[in-house]
Length: 173
Image (cartoon, rainbow, N blue to C red):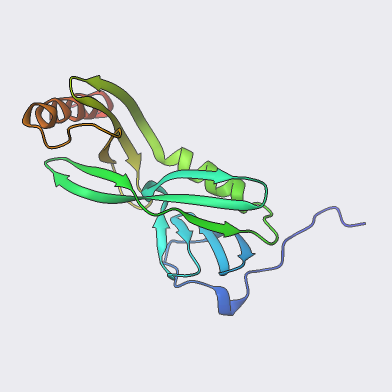
């Protein structure tokens, strides 16, 4: 009887091109190849790209399928980014192990600040997220469906909300 069961190491042929400070936390075979979770993000098998934990809007785990909704940049504004949901990627995990738990934990841990605000012409979520390997927070907003995102009063109100949020988490001078 083994006291400690270790998952076999990631096969060399499935190892993504890791950064110098990047380390593998969990991996899992799926229909499209291999998903690899590192301290910097999630390596996707089909594109061969890494989604940083701060670039993932939503994660859903059904017990078999892992659904990842990435964030896509809709607009760059002064001091923050406007994000929208990207296309959902679904992976049927063949031997999930720790991967779903690591993904959920890392995405959740990347969120340092979040608030939701009702405005005159819609609502907006303001988010400050930690980016692995960088100091400070990355600021973004995500408007709810139907919000008037380019209405000047909405943009001004959003600018003010982000500015106030940044002040609340800024270190004292």
